[in-house]
Length: 490
Image (cartoon, rainbow, N blue to C red; front, side, top):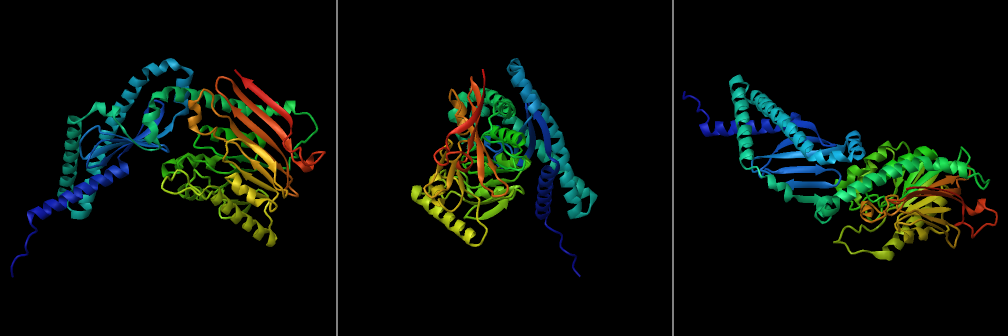
């Protein structure tokens, strides 16, 4: 009998290398993350295998920027998790601290990097040793794998240190929504400063304006009954994070039963924006949503996974908070420049499909109380088939009675036309409405039109309007408001 042939040395070396690399990668993936504060931000730092090295900074939901900071087989990933409200507020309250913010950030990054280096060493050694023990079942081989992993990490660190390029921060590559950053970086300081002031003022005003309305609105025109169904209509948020605080305040102040969003919640509809939608889960009430022309199918699928969100499309009807809603998503997605826009013809076709669904619901004995579309052109196709249709798109509110008796209520921009609005001297106003429905007949009784906005002279206004059936004199008076509460803050 001939002795069994031993594996060739190069095969053994190749196998050991594979075990070391796989174990080190698993170790970094499982326990190689470090949470570190950097200035007013909470971040997560991690090392990841890479052929080109460099640093990638993820700023969800806006996108990412990549720096050619070093050449090594490892990449530094920094995820900006959130802005710490206490540290950010301290900067707002004490602007003199901004002058020392650069040194503070440098110290934070240094401490975070040192912690990451120690944790990464432990991670790669533990991962390679554990996998080596599982594969070879020999402690000596396992320790050899751990030692080799540590040597590889040390060599990668030395390579990164030797090729470190501090000027890379001046030449970042942007992706996602941050791809437009080079064109606005010159205004970044003024935009951030103005937006902080703007958001702070709006949050303060929206909390108090309803109390002011209760004091000033003493005329007996309309007083909502406690059993009234209260619907908050919002639209065209366009990725403005200030909107969620205002919506939450309105939900609490008005004791809202359901929120209806008539679309354009996003700006570009990319997956990178999806994290912007997460505050919807915490609003505490059902959220009825239709797709706008700036919302993608990706956006829609993300919202469909939220328990409190009711996505309406293709005329689908649902009963929410005692009202039956049916909706149609916008047939156009305008950020996609490769598609030929369908214009009004596409909107009319979508409206006709919604109208057909409303007829089917009425025939089935489940008539719809409120239809929802994004574009007014599509919404007008429902005339005569539903008492009320809600829409947005034009960024200014309005109401009209259509020829066959349907009331069309168009909401303005609850995002003040998006973050771009703060680049102007005065931001566009933020608009929303509270709709009051009779719980028995499910008909609109009245609505409060809410408008907030203005930098330098911040203003909040609430005006109450009555539906025709609740107003002496009937048709033609629908756009005349009853009492208005207004407050101005210098």
